[in-house]
Amino acid sequence: GMGAGSWLQSFQSRLSETVQRVGSVPGFVLSRVLGELRKPINDLVTLFLGDVFAYLNTRGDATKPGEIPLRVLSKLAEANHKKLVSNEPLVVVSHSMGGQIVYDLATHFLPKLRDYAGIRIDFWCATASQVGLFEELKLFRESSPIYGKRQDNVVPFPDTTYLGDWWNVWDSNDFISYTVQPIVANVDDEAYNSGMSVISAHSGYLARPSFYRQLAKKLKRAKMQNWRRL
Image: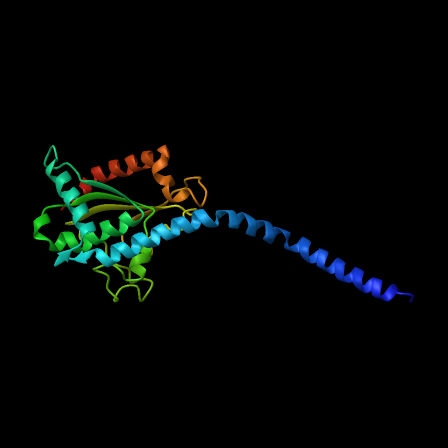
């Protein structure tokens, strides 16, 4: 064959690699794009995990509350004291880890701390929270293993003595925000499309006027229902 066989074998090898490289182009391009996103994603996740561990390790309980719960409780007490009229609602808007703090307050600290008796969160808007995830992992002070064993065995809504309406808002592009609809009963759980990238979506809620228009509608409806007060 005067070397034709070896040439053909070499050509086939080169052609095979070329075909494989062409087939890998979409994955290669996607990997390069994701590679560019790695640092901002790492920064976001690292900061989030740091917040989680710091809170869980220092929050304490009703017998000895930690600094973080006490700071928020003091602000709630201050707002409660500054009400202009007796029936003025106390409205709380939380973001990300703030959701877990508010949930612990409404379910554990407020019901058990006499120093903060009489404080009621009439409307709570939780944006970008991980309450659903934390409850699934049973990380809250009042989490109970009796809930969640069956799909229909959801966690009851917090005592309305301490929490009226709860609007939980999450964005499908925000990969560290979670729904609570199948986990906690009777929550107004709703998706919100910020139209932002994976990196920006976690804080996108609070940057969009459309979010505040929707919040205004929720507050108007809650007011019509007298904030679910008994």
